Image (cartoon, rainbow, N blue to C red):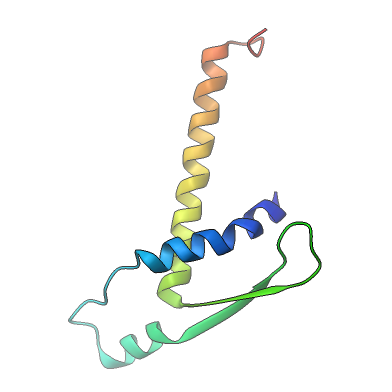
Length: 92
């Protein structure tokens, strides 16, 4: 399960960066500077021992986390719905 999450990081990172929200106009200079600072994290894609590095702002990492949680909830909701339709015997 952990390796599946790690293999989705690059795809979700690109999606998060492509649609990241614009900074609010009323943010202070310090908060803007902090949110624009790049944070790099290493991960190992499934099937390899070679680590990869992905760098994003804190806002990007927060958006990535939010989208991953939303995808997990949607997946659980859909799989639970399908199981209920099949009945207690699992569709057999």
